[in-house]
Length: 277
Image (cartoon, rainbow, N blue to C red; front, side, top):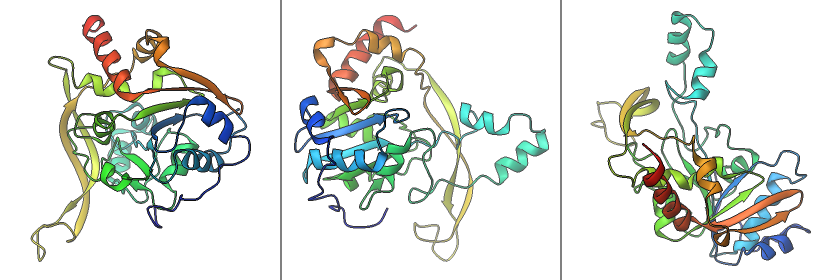
């Protein structure tokens, strides 16, 4: 993640992608949270990223989830990694897990477009060790500057900022079951359930620097409490999303949806309030 923050300015959209993006409704100045699965679509991650950056222009912004769910003791991704290990093997595996590094840790299961954005010149990434976001374009560094441990996808996270700023969500070859925006609604329902999380982070060591940022660090596990995130009903929430709030189209071999992020959160909140118990 090196290079000037405006490294995409002047980039031309690859042939064949600019038109479909315009037809879908992507305009200069747009701020897009993008979810994509490019397998079988014929789309290439780098070309699509560049086309999106060209479409939103120098004052637009492109963001993606850059999650690392395997950095956990309870996630499905982590449990798959330790499946079949003895207790001693699990302890050894966890003792050797590297701490999250925003500049270098790859995202996990987010797709090749997310990685193309994360590694783009001038990209910024938030510091949450499990649910970080990566962004390129106008305001990317400010968007990613603060991301508290206790707000995976809440009001104080980049997702909360995007909602407050009226971003749009672009879904490429994926459905509502992976719509990250719906998670923000979980923070807004009355008395949301809480749970403990644990992940590996770099922590400051006491000593000559007094434990201040920039001093010596070690890697270690940290525990914190946050909302018990649950995406098991997201497909149903999306199935009830008002169709007049969605713009549909195609980019290459991929179906697409574009909709307002705040609208999606409001819809999910209403649905969860009525249907979750």
